[in-house]
Length: 623
Image (cartoon, rainbow, N blue to C red; front, side, top):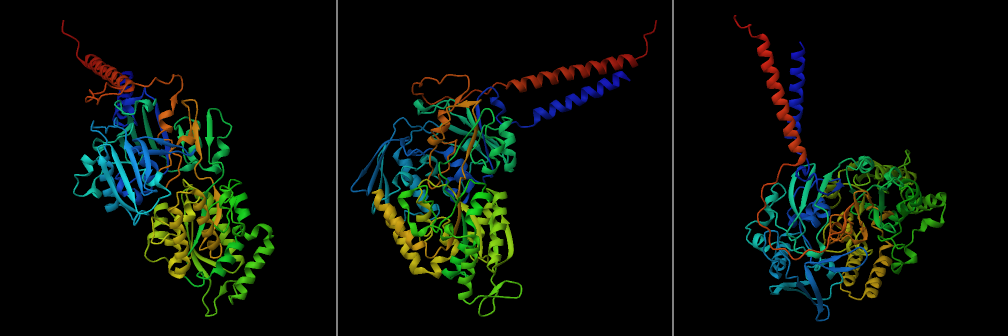
């Protein structure tokens, strides 16, 4: 009996350890190394950079991991040489010249050249989404092996982002593809060739993606002190505090502000956020629908929504009330236009609702028996309301319900209330040919420049996912939209910042009278919460602004390269390294060796038990 019990226990142990070894472990081969574990909340569908505009997850989270830019545009306003060691602006701002660092090498050992930049831009202009540089950028030309120039028809205010932010692709690979849009590495890390310090190593799709440090990284003075970066998908934001407190993740770059109370003041945890919130919570109004095409109706709606209540209570004091413009004038006082302030600031709730009702009454929209207004032709003011459910799902859903109650007070009914996943929302709000909703509530990110949203949201023709694409304002008020678009393009031509400011202020003065997109609140989208007991030397302000995105990602240089594992001194800069020879097969990680040893012991034990059992059952020898 005892033998049978021992045998069962041994077999159970054997099965458990077999499962342990068979289960893939994130970066299991690097258990003795220092890995930065980053939590994020979306799953990429592609690592093809030409498709980044169609996959916001790649664009935000993985763009800076896959390739490096010519220069770094840091949050503190500094421009740092990177792949390009220097640059010049010539010919009165119509020629931007970058000089590539001769040391720069791709991970397959080939040099990074000006030709890589030229080929990358040919691919971008041919295959990527429409660019704001159409009609501006004449040519990208490799002057020689290490000199590339961007030739424009006019000065370009965002040259440092549009041109300096170029992340070249290896031309010896991408230049030879017959179908660049179909080239994919997300499921085949062996195909990854990069100029950056980290190379795509492995993944468990839908769970984690691991980038290991290159031993042969060319920029030796900025060699990372950590051994790799693991991006870990955590779909449920409410788990962030627990995972951070338990040390299962090192940093959450987009920590929801409504969960901050669970980590603030806790040992070994620190946070960083924008000094003044500039993410914009908006209510796009579908001006294709009558009577939402009337600016007076939008004035009434803007007055009825209690923005102070939403900022203080629904955004828990982390938000600021929205004005009649798309940029937070508190964050950038040089753009201040007094008449664009929300008129509800100096009114009581009763006064605001009364004024909104007066506007609708005078327009002839009378209330029906159920309190819902009708147009003179009998059409009810009843509309569909769609909501971008992520990020900020709980806060946005609660604030949307409150906004709907505000609309009800002035006789506007919401007949359909539909939360949508982020990509579904983008399709419905921006890309769908027919838009059957009346209101679309969502957010724009904290962009690199405070004027970005006001300038790009009403450019025509469309660039990316601008607000004009959602509202249809270019169809209902084409002359007004054209004035705004002309001023926006003028602003983008300014190399003199004061002139740019004046163009943007002119946009605000026009926009405030029409408000096709109503600004609800400004709030902090990107709060970094991170552990200080594993890694030190955190400098979130050194995070690189990436293209249109202002997100302070810890995966981008310099920030990731400066992190120092606790307990070690920063290493002295190494001498330039020659291209590494193919690595020998890695030795088994410690946990693997232990597991194997234990299994061997168990197998031996089981064999011994079985042998003993056979001996016990064998007949006694004859004497």
